[in-house]
Length: 392
Image (tube, rainbow, N blue to C red; front, top):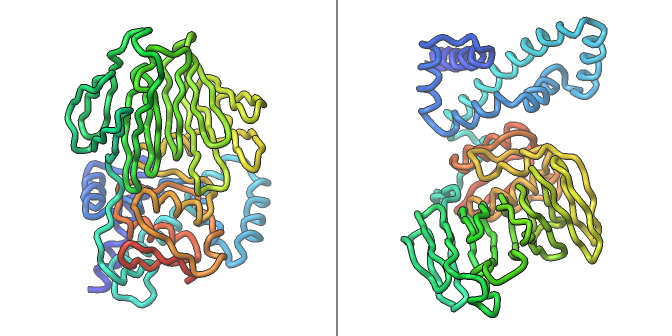
């Protein structure tokens, strides 16, 4: 029986390799799709082996116990040869990584009773990924739960809601209001929601986020909203009315553009990342202009601008989280908000392991933790809704 299991592992590895090389036939594709449908852990593994950066890191681990020294030697020798040789070297090494990685992951998924599991489940409690959840508090004080609310006509807007997104249509006309009153939408831990403001601006709200926005934009020369948490904005253009996002320590001013703001109270710094258009960071009267592909990091009263891979910071609302050399502490903060879990660290060292790659947003938490453990020297214990992080 054991021999048959090993054959199955290598068959799957071969199918994945054929897929990565665009050499898979229809029969192989059907087998691979059937394997992916068996469990979320298979999807997690498949996503991992498609990430080139993660493959390179695994190659470094395999070529020698002294990875840094070995990789330096390998790249030095390869550089002497024609560049086209590098593709062959990479494909061969990647094959080893895929075969070993698939075999290891399948072995671990079978060996759930092993004392050396990288994810120990000490107490079974259903932990689900985030889903659309939001509470709307309007200016009058009335509270609505959007995930269970149908369309509703409020004092100054009509809210068309489908349980995942709410679209506000402004019913007010200019000069019909003498003051700007604010509504508030709150996303709990384990939640997400999309909204379209009365001016046509689309906002994607992440878990543990609060957005305050005007009941109506009609009687104001600016569009000002207040954010705590994380949101991605696609701002409707209106040259006559600048759009301003107010955070704890600074404002983000735009006319029409797409950008992400991450400003959680429990984070050491705040990040604003520009996808398109042009924005201005206003902090204590000092202005900093961002161009597409730049990120402003606000920390300790300073604004530092750097070039970044925008997709890492602006695609969190899609199917996968993407991380680029982030610490385990940074990653687990995001997972804690999304899965509504608590995290305990057994020592400071485990917080500083780094991870680069993709993690599926809607997978089982145990599978996500297993993937993280496969790439580092840490393991996890899952008890109730608490994750304990420790060294292997």
